[in-house]
Structure formats: C-alpha cells, structure tokens
Image 1 (cartoon, helix red, strand yellow):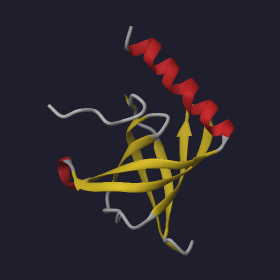
Image 2 (cartoon, rainbow, N blue to C red; image 1 turned 90 degrees about the vertical axis):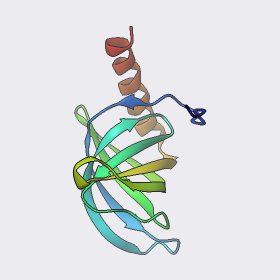
Image 3 (cartoon, rainbow, N blue to C red; image 1 turned 180 degrees about the horizontal axis):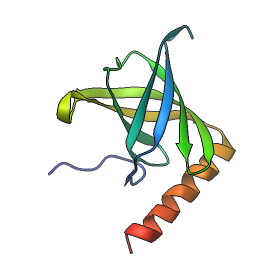
Image 4 (cartoon, rainbow, N blue to C red; image 1 turned 120 degrees about the horizontal axis):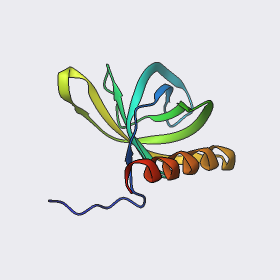
Amino acid sequence: MGINKRKHERVDALNLLSYVTIDSDGKEWNQGMGRTLNISESGLQLETNEPIQTKYVLLISIGIEDQLVDIKGKVVYTNRGDAGMFETGIEFIEVKPDAMAVLKKYISEFNKLFNK
C-alpha cells in the first residue's frame, strides 16, 4: 500500500459540477459536466465521459448542498475508470475564502455523519 501524500483527507462525495478547460494563455478550450468522486480542502477526483489532458487548468463550479462553489484547479492525472468513464485528479490552485468556508463545512459535516 502506498504512502498518502495528500495534505488533506478526502471524503467520498458525489456532487454534480461543470467545468471549463483553459490553457496556459487563458484560452478556453472545452466545457463539460461531471461529478466528484471524492473531495478535500486541496483537491478532488472528478468523473467525466471524456478524458481531460494534464496541460489544462479547470474552472470548476460544484453544487454543494444549496450552494454553488467556484474553484480553479490544475489537472494532475486522468485515468480510465470503471464502465469506460474517466477519473481525473484535480489539485486546487485558487479557492476564494467564501468557497473554502462552504467546502470546509461540507467536509466537517460529512465526517461527523459517516466517520464517528
């Protein structure tokens, strides 16, 4: 079993999201929909129908409970998962304070319900 290098513990979570891929010059290339498989304060795993290349940065809007959270993240990896879907690891590079507050609250409440 490998060593966990993550800064924050991830919780399993299924949340719908939309994303826009942008390159290093800020040009938009693609839009898509997906869902989170897990999420933490520093990243998430995203499931999509199409692969997302690691050269892109994503502008992500996640529906968390009754809030819409906007996050900017970089693609760390993309692998083919179960049933032909693609699983993409995203490391957050920009999260506004109000979005981080929603994220922290969601993770804390999830942990209270399911981990103790």
